[in-house]
Length: 242
Length: 205
Image (cartoon, rainbow over all chains, first blue to last red; front, side, top):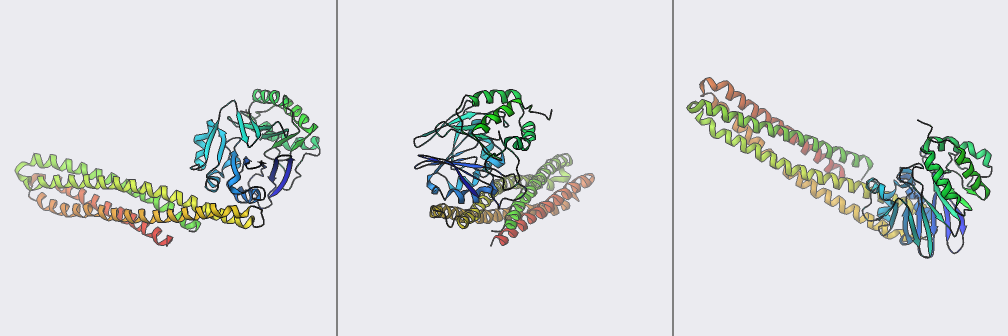
């Protein structure tokens, strides 16, 4: 599992992905970890097949007892089907996920972990002195869907928004936005159902100060590419299957 | 426990539930047959005097079987839950062991020791719980064979009593046949349940 620090200050943001041992037919995913002094948040920790390499990778940065929080942007299996295993590894941890999905996510196994239900208007995750904002992104693509914004590190975790389907071993950052667009187009047109939801999200995100936009699949956007992505997404017609 | 053993455990528990559901249906048929026999015996009056107490026995046997199957069903459901838990803990142990291998050079690899030990303990607890449930279920299945055997004896007696019932002979013989047939089905199905259980018991050893 490749590990890339995307922010380092009083705390760290680390991206895990491009696992060379991933079974061929499951979609590649980016997992993110926010590591503070005594705590650790796993953002979209991934599917069952990814549990072992993911935990092994996190153990380079934090001991098991300091992995205190999980966040699931929505209910998909590539996001959180590993929950039943985390539940046994981290019985002390808390899962932050939409209240709407609670009865569904518990199917993956959630006996010990505390389920912290996020209301539709979002909320906050506090890790030591770090405050992360939970930003609503409903219907993009899931009906109850959240992103995470770190105003201090200026990192925006965008879930499936900004995702691209890439060949194995693709670079971590977007290096040529124009070339990257074609890897995103169909994914966004087909998976995102609502132009109205898209416009509301863009308006909300444009008001934030963002250096890095980090999706759950594909490459990360930095600097001007963040604005380019928002402009491109705004002009894109989504929900094309109907 | 291997993956194929876990799968055969799930299949065995599911097939036991299916067989028990069929046993329940047959026991209800016996109950109906008893009610039918009672009505015929009442109409036959003196000619079927010996048959009348038999109908009560048949009814009691059907009720006993239904009550027993209800208890067994509850146990089979618990066994299914234990099987799910065991599958989950076994899978977790396997994956934690993989983590330990992959994280051998990680700074915090040692912190995995406690969760791995806990997972192994849970797995052994589940295994013990599973064995206890299988033992109880086997005993209960033996118990449910008793009314089925008694029903066959009663069916034989019913045939004798029916032979003295004049024009009601055929009707009462049909009742005796239906009780005998139902008892045979229950016996066979319960036997299949026991075989399935014994098989997973052996596979897990």
